[in-house]
Length: 168
Image (tube, rainbow, N blue to C red; front, top):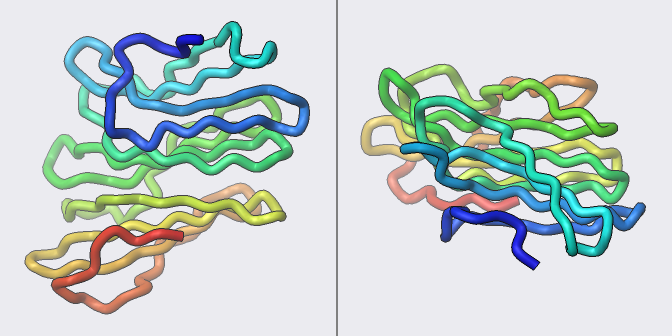
């Protein structure tokens, strides 16, 4: 069964089945001139889908990846072009039927942040890694969500020229 039309290829679209049988998926989709983040849910085994647009800004989104907790919570992270320059890592959470506000979880600077990856633990806490480019150097970063908010990003690696594609 089709979930969406005009979805973007080469994104980490992921589908999950929650404990109650609900299916959920996140993906990027072209809207006007920009790639935007969407989520869709199905309560009848994928025969019908309810689509929700999660972002609606005049900049492209890239590299969406999502972690799902069996209880029904979701956290999607992606990179997004900044208006001034560079890219940020952003996140949105779905808990108890509600989407949170979008949060910038990377440091507030004009460096490029890329290749986010996300995981969730048994306590429904989300952790995210990515790499940040500063000049010719790369730094692996980590941030986590606990007790209602995102913690300040931590440097996992020192500045190096060969830190790419972190995974968690």
